Image (cartoon, rainbow, N blue to C red; front, side, top):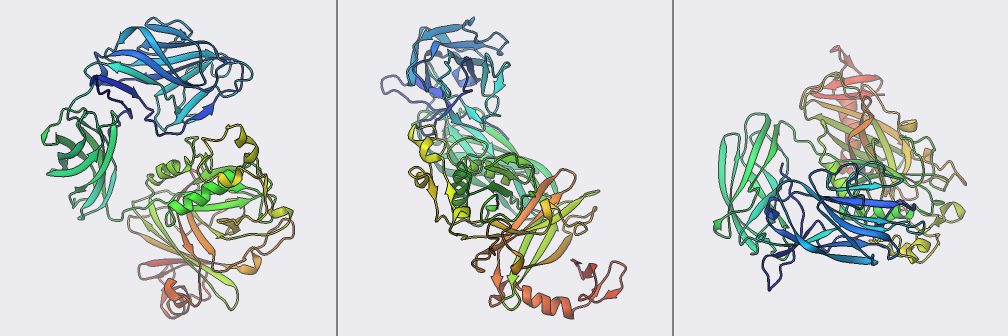
Length: 605
């Protein structure tokens, strides 16, 4: 996999050798950030782009969130940041300026010539006690890009890509031979999982490093001793230096299971030889019997009394709209009419709080990127994890006795040994609503929004909370109304410690609708609409304390036989022959333990 810098350049009509280089391309939301202390900041952006070597930096642009900052300077440091780098004095460049609230452009007294290797462009300033968030940052998952050190809070150079997951939107104005006519670099080739003997596709992302719009490219692709050539019509704008485009290529079928390295190379751009660099990118092709599908389990912890929790309400709502068939969420309520427990499957330090797969704490609206709906990007990264097994679930509600039956299927995608897997079930309800103080949603965003503090990080979908402090008639989705074990306790023995790829295991469990009650306030039954219930099943690794995979199914009613659950209970379980692990015939109605029918295994409880 090859990663390339995300950069943007505006090309002057009068000077085709002038570009504005940086990670900010004009479209990202900028969020205010700071340590909320009176102290001096030193912030530097790392740059290493071979196409810039020999060019000259003539000015530096930096956005700030205050006009009262003092001792402001921009600087350039070659090599690595040292303990004293950015302390107001630089061996290379140090230019003082007066801060403006917004974009500041500082012209260098003498153009700075860019050499080979790493260099840092940065800013220094001193914030007062009232400058809580003096910096403007852009969201980014790029690591080793922007570093910060402050006099009191960050005593050592710290990567902003880790926390708060942001990048400095600093730009440099560059003069020199940095613009080429037809040049494409390979940014990334996605990893591929393919079934043996079947062709697949790989997503390729390229960047335009030339002055011409990219209308088509010629390429080669090699994997497992096979090489194919291709021609793709792809439009990549020339408005920005580093503008990107993506497309799919065919990956030829590979017969033998295993991991293979594939190489994609752009040979021509617009019919002429490609001079972009890097022109090639590699990726991994994993060939297997069963291709895994990863579904992260998002668990949110919220409460109607919590004034900061409406952001999670909107985050989950938008994620369900964007990914209706893939996104899986379980929302645990606290101290309101939807609470069923305070014994949570993870340690909850406060509200709101959210976790992916019980080991990755995040924000239910901003995600890890700390920006407007950044949860979408964080979820997408979680989807790229490789689970050891596929999970499926079906659920049916019996109208005559109010019993909800859930059936789960597990298929191994790789061999495992000495594993310790447990499974669990979560029942959620959509469309819950109520009246009274226990259903009154508190909201702090109406106050904070007025001074603009949350206008960028809490923007999409938050309009309804910008003008009122409390909401009585919200409708809540994904609310947890039942679980198979207290505090996330799982069921053992369903998936053995040692399994082979393509092994299948099955399990069933029942829930009573009458037991799905709130344990707070009026203690009402939370099944308000039995057509809007969902069943979630997940596999949990007891060694790593990590949910490996999960699946979700909208509960069907007896009248809808599409799940096959009712017929399976009556015909498959009752009428077919079953055996225990010793090979003895057993009665499926009375036997407890693992029973086998052909290649299928069930755990009867």
